[in-house]
Length: 245
Image (cartoon, rainbow, N blue to C red; front, side):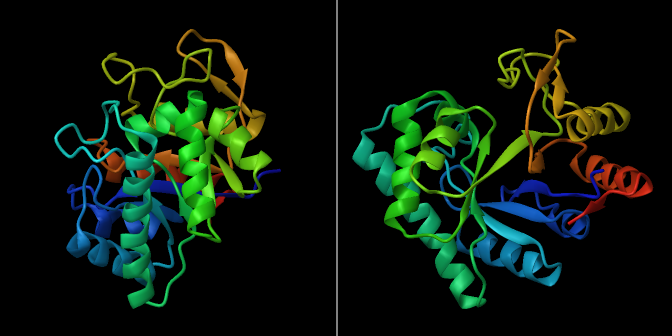
């Protein structure tokens, strides 16, 4: 019987809803300058996370604030490696000020999606983890390239699933250009998460149930209904004997 769940949220992205979200989540992914965020926003969100004992992760992306890191970029391996490394190091420097540890790394947007299927992109992220000698976990999709490489190379992982996103039968997120990509209804969100929790399967947009494993569930902080969805999900889970922790 499942008795606890980790809920993570992408934060520090300019939405400014972190103070409302933090009491209801257990881990967060802080934008560290690639698609959003700067030292000021990182410090603010880190202090909120510290106040509510929320585990802190780095949320690096392609260096592309214009498109919010959601479009693939053509970059050399060295340039991308350096960008990801510097983003994580910047957040770690803020954590050092607060005497806190980095709990995890979760790539953002197009970088996350590409690392799931592209061995070269996945390897760059794994190399950054190894090069920084981080004692941090990597949040990765189930049955992804980055999960496979991380396991092979001794990087600890946590499988992540998306509470507020729909899946195809290939366990790929429905593209954001599609009208059914994002789940914005409280009941639909709870049912989506509950199915994954209880059966280790996800109901795809075609109605087929596919195997999935999830150690942590993400709700996007920029979801228009983020605060409402998170508070409702936490309440429903607790009513069913499942604690967010």
